[in-house]
Image (cartoon, rainbow, N blue to C red; front, side, top):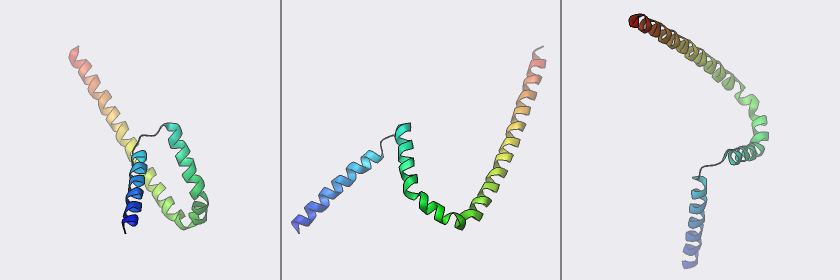
Length: 94
């Protein structure tokens, strides 16, 4: 029983060390390396299941495109209002 508790405590300590490593910020190089390792691990699975999620992905991309168009429209409007208000300000100064 005592031996089992010692093993569990040692494992818990190891997990805490690993957790602390994961909480450290990564450099761009480390992030890219980690991404590529994960991609290489899961790429075949993603390719095998691609057809299962194609319609959902397409719907998401359509929605994303619509949102980006709304954002672009809003930004244009904000820019026009800013230019318009600056023009009024400069006329008031004269």
